[in-house]
Length: 205
Image (cartoon, rainbow, N blue to C red):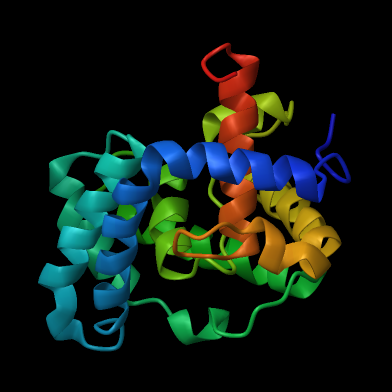
């Protein structure tokens, strides 16, 4: 089963409203921290700010990353060419770039002593710094979409699915992204998937 063309503007608008009603304050705090962190991306003196940010993302995403990995993730994140994600695109070339970008972050954490490949945490770190371009890897979403892969292969499928949906919904962007920053299509689709997964589990109406 794939998600492509299943989302309508009405579905996204309703899901975003439901999500924002519960998590607006939490998301806004993380968004503001991500904006401050973005100012330090090209400054290696920004390790402390980045470490605070990756710790906050871990708490927000409930990814259960180890405390010892916070400085590893901060250092790996600061090594990445974030400017390469500056111009939004949903084509195949950019999909590949996003997957490679997150792969470098995930492997960067692992190569610095991390015990596992942190695809969920890594993608969430990248998502909050580049919310217009980077989708989130979430195991529950992966299972809901019935994707067979894990790790990079599953994330690649998720990126392609979300990019197709984003391109399809682009003309309705202003009407469906809601009023809570970051107001991007990728963020709105992530909220929608969260809502659909929670509803399927009986935790949302």
